[in-house]
Amino acid sequence: AGNDVKLKGAWGARGDVMNVNIDAPRLNQLGSALKLPLAGTARIQGTVGGSAAEPVANLDLRADGLRVPGDVGIGALRGKVAMAAGLNGPLDIKLDVRDVGPRGGASKQPDWLKAASLVVQGPRARHTLALDLATPQADTVKLALAGGLVEAKGNAPLRWDGMLQTLQLGGRLPLKLTAPASLTLGADAVRLGNARIDAGEHGQLVLADTRWSPQEIIAKGSLDGVAVDLV
Image 1 (cartoon, rainbow, N blue to C red):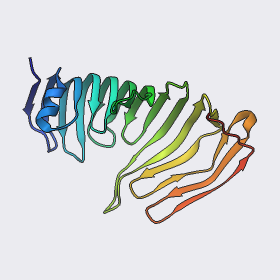
Image 2 (image 1 turned 90 degrees about the vertical axis):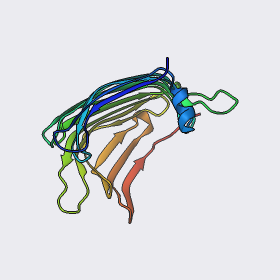
Image 3 (image 1 turned 135 degrees about the vertical axis):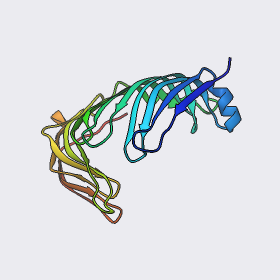
């Protein structure tokens, strides 16, 4: 049997709802038709709706043995995505992936990630985000944010304002954020407030003012005895 795609309903305007049922056990067939390097199996079930500006979704995602353009492979993906409309509409997003890395070339190359997990919960205007990463070399990253999207006014782009609650690296380069720091993310500006990062016996990094925009990059701080050994 080939791939089965069933879409019923409408999408693009407020109040629209489209039922989605995609069962693709042979993504390589789809890749051949589109002339893209696709492989693996995928299944997407649920509904999407609303508009591009205010999307609504309730989807279950499952994929195994994926290969996507760029010669990137994903061993397994599992996810649930629930999004309601408006800034006060709740988000409930859970994604887990395993064994992510290069799949092209004659020689086997090591994976970049052994496992990754993303959880987003709460309204768009006031939610939490937790990201956990682990590499085959036993390096780990834990990241936690709390904040929300700020409604754009006029021609101003949408931005996210909140706090960097947790940043912790384990493995060959152990680092830990000692206290929450303010964080703003946008298409035209990124700003991190005063952040202190402890490297244990290796020293401390202080990021007093970190800003990015298309016009400039500003990074002010101090480094006290940090030693790095990734060999």
